[in-house]
Image 1 (tube, rainbow, N blue to C red):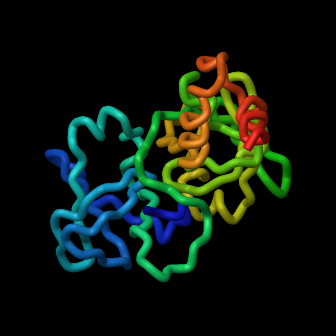
Image 2: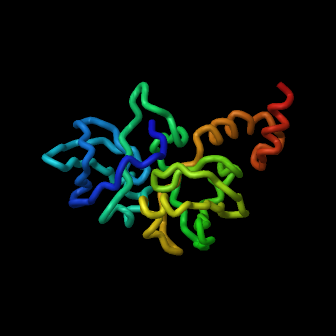
Length: 206
């Protein structure tokens, strides 16, 4: 389990034969789980100043592999007793999102992210979403996309500074949104079109 708060930007040393080797100040142990751009991976090798994780062919089909170069977001798994910030992140990427628009507002920047329609039901206004491992708040939900407002500090210290229109990103929807939606969808006649208003109505009965 993770929080969506990036520990540091790790440098990509190499990516060969499914093995991604990274250089970072943080040094994990073999077998540790670690999120790289939001995907939970296992450390399989360590060396002085570097560590290596393995990406299966299945993972590579799901992830935005074009972002696994130069620098990547890195977050170790939470330990019992750690301070909890961000939101609960599993490190299980649901799908790829696409940056469709970037608008600079002076002291912040709006990023509009589109996603496959089957996952849009899990995007909630003022809810949480994870983009390449970064915990963020959804400011607005649109028909086939959503809007994030990112402060300069976040942009300067994450991959957001590299994102352009058309950039693919790893996207993990909020775990609780998925669970609540699937718990209640069978209790409503409009099962395939359940809205969050429907969920609120169902919950109000109990």
